Length: 624
Image 1 (cartoon, rainbow, N blue to C red):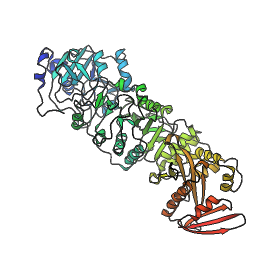
Image 2 (cartoon, rainbow, N blue to C red; image 1 turned 120 degrees about the horizontal axis):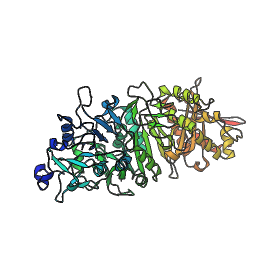
Image 3 (cartoon, helix red, strand yellow; image 1 turned 90 degrees about the horizontal axis):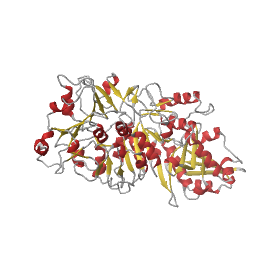
Image 4 (cartoon, rainbow, N blue to C red; image 1 turned 45 degrees about the vertical axis):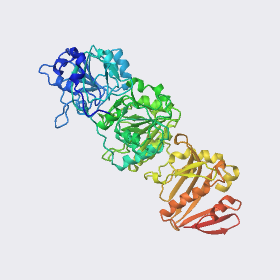
């Protein structure tokens, strides 16, 4: 942590007084036509930038190059960036958004992890580097502080390196030090490092997404979280997890609650165990004080942090990225909103691919189902002009909205479209379904029944008699293949007792009746086991309400390997509670005389049971 008495930069730089210049003297060394790199994030060298912008006779035809900047450039009351120069940026942050939309700043859509090699090849030329660093230590080393990212590559490429030396810049640990001999000129400053406060999201749809994401993060996972506010919110719901690790391109104040509660240990990380590996910090003074001289944090260049091989080697690597739109085949847009460039690619592609190859890893894309005004769906039949596919459908695994979670990897176009329509806002599902059929993604014979929001509160984990655990949840139309697989695992006797005749297969219409229900007079639940990306349906229960009697006809299927351990009872209790909450009077079931399991299940019910026998079957009525 910083001591209360902060040394003056001039005194600390006395041994290198021959390198010390004023900001005015330093920027005067920039030549006409040069490419000038500006340090990143909250470590952007604001004094140098503002001095350059205010020169009476600035160097002609220079280009400012940067990853992202925070509060580095002045803006007028309308949000216009007050810059006199051409810019080239890899990230469209708040500082740059208006100027990019006006065509005054060029946005380069490429992974930030690939920029260092392009600088080395001079395909991205750097002549001058303007950076901000800490005070030097006794050995003449300064720290790049809260922004290492692509700065080492810029320093290696530049003919001239000018650094603001700021006693308020924390000394980050790791591969973040530079010897003063590599810096041509030093400009003493004594200003607060720029801060970027995190504002917690209040919207209920964002909270629901965050809770969904949190539900699939396991103890011992290694996390990377993009800059999106939805993704960051998920961290607030995992403060009960143990031994989490961080391997991130960027960290923010969102990690502080996890640190304070002891959730982050990095004990299970495959590389750099017990360390938080990152390249850039965007946050408050509180975060910076946590970083200062703290060996827990290991700052490395962006190309090292974002190496897909390193990412894939992490234990249970979880990458959480925020998207702005996705089409029904799984193509994702992450850097445009309605045609306007917004944020950038960062290194999200590397993290998603790396997480997908990590043992136990989870690549997660999240987005709200509608635009902020609720007037348009972010799940599109196809991405329109102005929303380019920046993440290929082949790299998409988990997709999360406030209406649930879909797992797309390895799925067909029909399965993807069906699953994503169920993640869309109900008001847009019918239109998306019709468009999907028009494109040939979904067969003409398939129907859309469920126009309700997915009831996450109905999900429950149940431990059975033998200790195994299943999740009981509402059925989705995308469960069709899982239902068919369950059917084909039933014995001939089970099929006969369930369907009252010998059936060799289920038609598409019959499968749909068991999972594609409207949740009004038709309701279905499934029991699943395994992870969400590899979930297997081992049980199914449904009920169909007769409006003339307000009684519901029920039916069940249970995988033979999961019978006789309480799963049937759990399914009956689940749909029974659901029906009672909806005011249904009770259940009716017809079973064969030899179906002892169903007869026993009915008699063990806590409700009033009436039994009527006929020559062919037993008619059971359970009144709530």
